[in-house]
Length: 183
Image 1 (cartoon, rainbow, N blue to C red):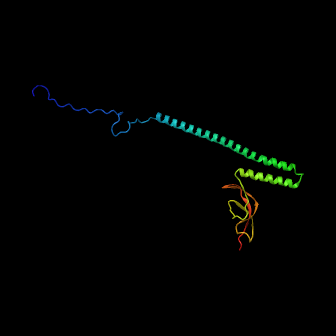
Image 2 (image 1 turned 180 degrees about the vertical axis):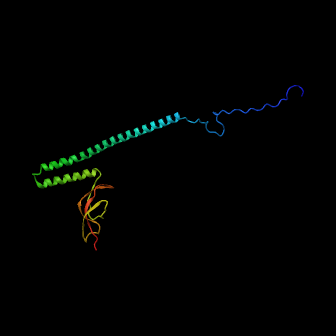
């Protein structure tokens, strides 16, 4: 090979230089740069701002709910008071006729009492005053005990004051006298 030229050797294959911003197989994300202190401070400020806004929103919601709840309470009190106005009117009418026939006044007062019982029933507190039923501590409050041989032990022998309520909504238990066990 005397041509004066150096023998040709295959050129070295050049390896491509990898671009760090390109995604390579097996890698899910581009390399990230390390956040500097300014980026971290800005992110922290944004989180603090979001936190303060969330607290303010929560406080506004709490105040709005309290205001709405007070409005509902006022409406319910007014509705309940309005239900009692006819009872009060009838009591005043009965008092106006106090000088007339006592039996008429007594019948009027009984009618007003029945009207009041009906108002309580309409509000969800029906009256109960059963005698001879088993004593139930969730519905009755014992105010006395009697030895009654004709009654079953631990039954209501007498109702001193009726109870009002049902199904777990109790305004007042019935005050009762209970028969004791015979020995």
